[in-house]
Image (cartoon, rainbow, N blue to C red; front, side, top):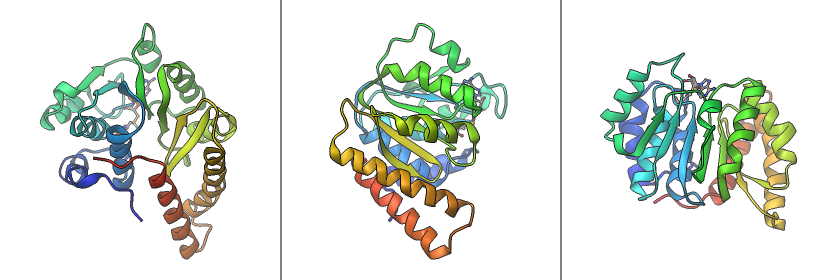
Length: 241
Ligand SMILES: C[S@@+](CC[C@H](N)C(=O)[O-])C[C@H]1O[C@@H](n2cnc3c(N)ncnc32)[C@H](O)[C@@H]1O
């Protein structure tokens, strides 16, 4: 079972996003499309870490297709890509009006921030202290029922530890998706029994998925774990339009 991004999303990912260098897999792009277009909550999408704009254009195009608020794209653009490349990619995709770039670090951008956020996508600095500071600084602006999604939650120690040691223990966060290296949470007041069960299933499958990614599971079991994770993630995510 694949994560679906709707027909227009599939076309967009194939024709536009794939042409931009970056670290997202196609399935991760589909999942972001679904979260930005049909995910719960109201407010903007905040992206921490834009690089050349691969995830930015997916989030912005999905928001536009769904008639929802656009993306605030935060990156100091010091490392992998220049600000010019990012801006050129966003402009070429025709998404200039949907993307508000903040060319600064996330800890600078959060100072004075007031807007509600429906989707917080954290893919900036990957060391533990930075990713934890991103979550602590920005999560208070995520609306009730909104989504916080992290990239690289397996092979990078910072996001992996934050997810496993801190976020999995919180009762105000329910796991709603694990797709390739993304782990996504929804903010919940009091988790329902169903949400608790689902989070527990995700946590157990996550361990197996990790072993699978390290090629320490037989191929058949690896594929079964991926399939089950996708089915669970899909069931917990509203259908993309
Ligand atoms: C892995 S890349 C992001 C990839 C991008 N999301 C994509 O889809 O291609 C990480 C980015 O985070 C940016 N970054 C590093 N520290 C940051 C910080 N403190 N605040 C915001 N962005 C940061 C880097 O400049 C880099 O462009």
